[in-house]
Figure (cartoon, rainbow, N blue to C red):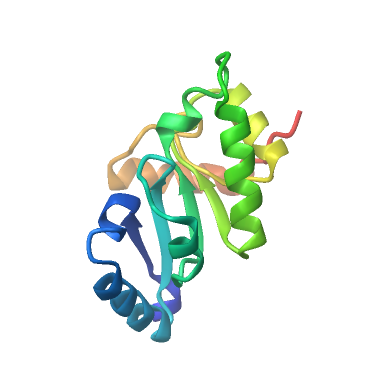
Length: 146
């Protein structure tokens, strides 16, 4: 498999444990073409300056934030700010834990182009996943924006 087809996910908490060592390893992975994604964003305490100086290709908004989109809280503002920041740094934005149409609509309108979660499908065994993909050839998911 070509390295450019691989994605390496690192959690925010793992990232800050030994930043110099982790950065060196991430740079090596990037040099051979592996994409690097920051998982569980918004759940740790990483410095934005540190984040900016790492070879991260995608930022994954944690499901704990996504699950609170519909409530009366500042979550929408936090997610919107995270998306704007990631896009300003040329990162792809991925939302984890999307479970409702309302969550998907908000995220799509906010600029998230990749969404994961039970709203689309529960985890499937390989055979069922192959069938699921085959069925989706005829009717692929469309990003919901309204």
